[in-house]
Length: 112
Length: 111
Image (cartoon, rainbow over the protein chains, first blue to last red):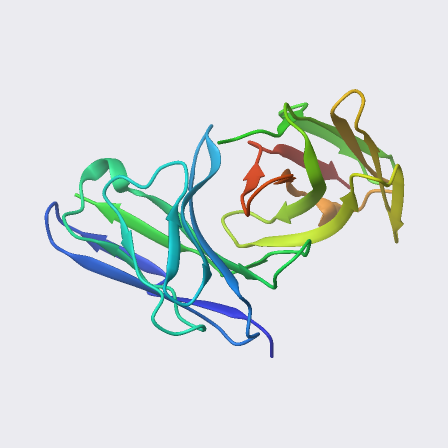
C-alpha cells in the first residue's frame, strides 16, 4: 500500500531532550516536507527536500533540523525541544511536477 | 508563507444541502489544490486545478478558479455527515516547490 509513515505517533518529552521523528514513504517520491499544525495558524512548512541531499528551509525552520540521506526517509530532528514546539507534525511527499501531496498520519508532540 | 485564506472559517449545514467554501490568495500560482482533514488526522488530497483551468469536477466536488480575482471555490453537493471535516486550500507557487496552505474551513454536516 502506498503510504507515508511517521513514528512515533504520540510523544511527550521534556525541554532540552533531543528527539527524532521519523518519516518514510514507499512511493519513490522526490519531494518530501515537514509541516506543523497549530490551532488558528493552519499548516506551516518547516523544511522540505527536493531530492536526496537537497533540503531547504520552509516558513518556520528555527529549532529544527532535517536530513535526506535516502530517498524514502526524511527525519525531523529537534536538538533541544522547547514548549513552543508542542504541536501536531505532518510529513508529506509528492512526485515532481504539479501533483498531489500525500500526508502521513501525524505526530502529536508535547514538550513539557 | 501562508498564502491561501479560506472563508468562512466555520460552516454548519444539514445533510443534503450544498456547502461552498472559498479561498483567496495573493501571488501568481501554478496550481491550487484542496485537501480534507478529519479531526487530527492526516490531510487527504481532493482535487487539483491548474492555473489555466477554470472549473473541475470530481464526484460531488466542484472547484472553480478565477486567477484574475485570485480566488477559488469548493462546492460539495448533497452533503453527508461523513463530509464533516476541515477543508484546506493550498497554492503551488509559480516559482519553486512550496505548497502553501491556508488555515482551513471547518465544515459540520448534521443529520
